[in-house]
Amino acid sequence: MSGELPFEKELALKRKEIEEMKRKMSILGLSSVDLPAIIAKLEDEIKTMMENTYAQLKPHEKMQIARHALRPTTSDLIDAMCTDFVELHGDRLYRDDLAIFGGIGKLDGIPVTLIGHQKGKDTKDNVARFFGMPHPEGFRKALRLMDQANKFKRPIITFIDTPGAYPGNAAEERGQGEAIARNLKAMASYGVPIICIVVGEGGSGGALALGVGNRVLMLEHAIYSVSSPEAAASILWKNAGESQRAAEAMKITAQDMMALGVIDDIITEPLGGAHHDLQQTADSIKQAILKHLQPLLELTPAERIEDRFDKFRKLGAFKI
Image (cartoon, rainbow, N blue to C red; front, side, top):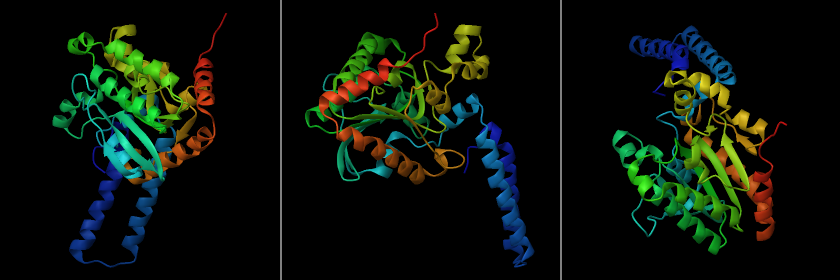
């Protein structure tokens, strides 16, 4: 796997050592019993190193995994877990915002509407998708699909992966804040089950616009925060270089969110992160969705609304 993160340097060196040994064996035509045994031992060492490394990641290191260039996107995950998926486009008001991806598909035979932030695969794609930061038309596109799902009584599944809503002048002129607020209000009122999964980076209002659900889940190395650690560091200490300090203070990890009661479940990732095995990641997300969806399907629409209200009403702690 290419694209090693800073804390993975030792692992990369160990992998390189194994690949070099395999190459030499191939060139020399060696079939000694000892060399395969040595390679197997090194591979076991790598696995142990990875288990130890990923068991004690710091918040800023989890942030690096959540932002990894090879991390599965919303479209990757939907393609890997759904059948009969049909993508839907446009907000019917302005244009089709490529930072939001969504449509209708079947999850284990259950018709559902799936919507999520969509980052790009390379620089050109990221520019077209605004690096996963929606404009108002993106949020209105999501709203259109959710309204349709509620009308036809399909569960709504959202995938959250954005640094935040697009911050440019054009987005503000077209009603960025109003579009986010309208989504929050609408999601609170739907009678269908809503399950939200933070699959990468959940940043600020851009994340919340797809984040009002009966159940909110997170991938193991995803992050969820009121703003990016860089932005918070710039505000608090006038220095974006203090992002590691901010990440620690902001409690952005899935484990932090679970402890605070913000999310309802943590979905385990493959060793090394979701980008190491797309299908395993998609299967784990699918199983988690089905586990939480079944009890929600047994509720009435009014009970689902009340369940969602109760969940968000309980968030927060107060000191007097």
